[in-house]
Amino acid sequence: MKVVILAGGYGTRLGEETSIKPKPMVEIGGKPILWHIMKIYSHYGFNEFVICLGYKGYVIKEYFANYFLHQSDVTFDLQKQSFDVHNNFSEPWKVTLVDTGIDTMTGGRIRRIKDYVDDTFMLTYGDGVGDINIDELLNMHKKHNKCVTMSSTQPEGRFGSIEFEEDGKIKQFIEKPKGDGSWINIGFFVVNKEIFYYLPEDDGLIFERQPLEHLAADGELYTYHHNGFWRCMDSLNDKNKLEKLWKENPLWKVWE
Image 1 (tube, one colour):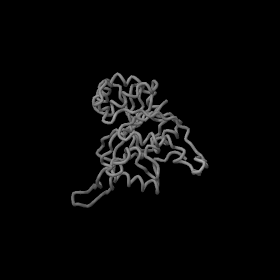
Image 2 (tube, helix red, strand yellow; image 1 turned 180 degrees about the vertical axis):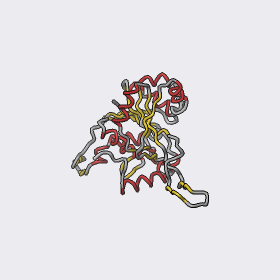
Image 3 (tube, one colour; image 1 turned 30 degrees about the vertical axis):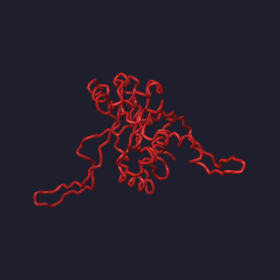
Image 4 (cartoon, helix red, strand yellow; image 1 turned 90 degrees about the horizontal axis):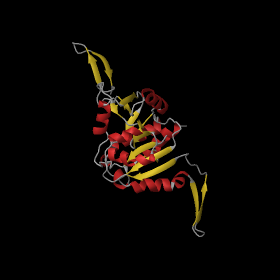
């Protein structure tokens, strides 16, 4: 089963980072967040990837074209115009890189990789990591046998929560509890190929709007509730938090 990763957006909120590279190539702990996402799936045995390129997609192409150079020690002999790779380690990955357009929206990007996927495939965004149990997610998808399973979680609240009595005495204080009870889309989808009936040829089509709304109305959209760690790298502040976690306690690092 292949894993499709949406990696074509501009990532404008990441400022200087995305002026020279696409958001999925912004590094956490010296590795692109795209690498972290792929490691999560690889841990569960999913090693075939289809990456939807857009903004500065050539950076991602160059990364994989020179992957062994990024991962290994190398000796260059300039006179002989040759090089030796030391301690070469490569992931068991097969990666297909597809140019899906600079300004194409998420639905249009998925439509463009139709010929690269089989009957059922994984799908996620190129900027979010979590300790998602991919096996449980897939088992749930197989159980309900509908078109799409979307992972969801309750986001962390922005402020502390106070429970108090009438005289003002605080009974309980919780710093940044889970949100107001709502659940949000965090990617990590499992998708049957029938999805393409919901994706007309429209580069401006946003997957999260009309297609998912129609799937829900048709009873073809289910959700897998994820109660563990998840975080999206949407801003420089998010990046810094993930960097700190990587050094102290990388909660999404499910691999050895």
